[in-house]
Image 1 (cartoon, helix red, strand yellow):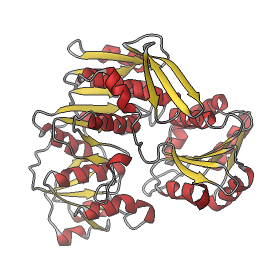
Image 2 (spheres, one colour):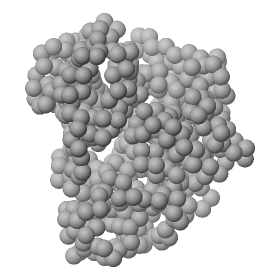
Image 3 (cartoon, one colour):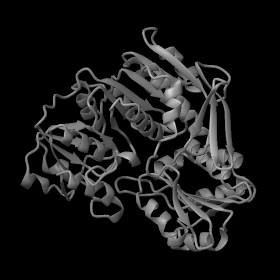
Image 4 (cartoon, helix red, strand yellow):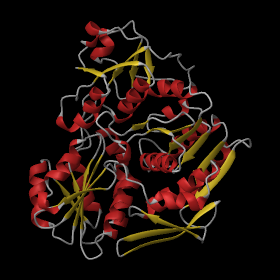
Length: 477
């Protein structure tokens, strides 16, 4: 299904009926919860609603009063919504579309943009970039909350601090003064938004080329109202798109240039510290140099919003994290630590492995990756090998699972077996492939010891988190 994301936004009055097609998606479910709380009559359908791994999201929506239907068009017998809300993952032959050809459709991004525009007097901050935007959206929203700013926050991940029986954690209701939200570039829908400020974390390898990404981010920048906070390398690609009317703030993870520079990072005896601009010390709640850059970006945004860097630094260490972002799952029967992460593109995978290596100076990392689709897997195939050859140590092991398939049109190519064989031929590190999780679990349990770390990575499939817990022994958590 094709969308013109820069079409005129719809008019949705509170009280209107909205039916979400694919409501279990991480972005769709958060928006559904947000609009339900704002007074809309929300229903939804999802083909994975009955799967146990999705209950944390579906169950919270049901507890909040949202009625969930099978995705077979049956909702039409029970309700007559004013609009169908859908995402780019929904295909034209969907049963709910077929059952309601007369009901207007609104893309998720357009519904969100319309809702934000209706928040009169609200300062909106969109967080985007190829890597880190979910963590940063949650971390920024939580830091603003701790600073007493009471933000509304809509995220592409479940924020641990804000989870409850009626809220899976990807939405937080605020007083309307600030709105922080994740803006996705993967389907180009970020150009739908016209926020006050945009935070661009990076331009990486995901979905399409960096040149195409730069053009999309350029269109996004052109719609910003007040300012852009942007990582240095991304700024070099995007500065030609930045109009003089915008306040521009540049941050640099290499510590060389920019308004904010990461000048130090240290992991020692379990304590992680970052230094910014040679003087501002930040105690980080999680490892990884990339998280030091994330923290620096938040300091930059908070400074633009009028919060002193020293105040922000004191709050950053209180972050409770986002589900499936380097989550500790426990230990195997042989003592190997198990972590679970949403990493799914080249830069995220490499950063995640580097974080795991910090925790295993005398051990090995067994990095398990389930690609989140055949198309993305094929796109990243070449660059992933180069990144892995640089980041993996001689004794580390990288393991492929089959790509996750959620239905719809697919070429079913490349397979993990094909890619693993190519990597073995071209690379110098250890590359394995398993078609069954139980066989892989047996290998990991057998080979990984107490000085080693098992890292489970992959997007879209919530069962990966449950599997990470299954291979951890109950007594080891």
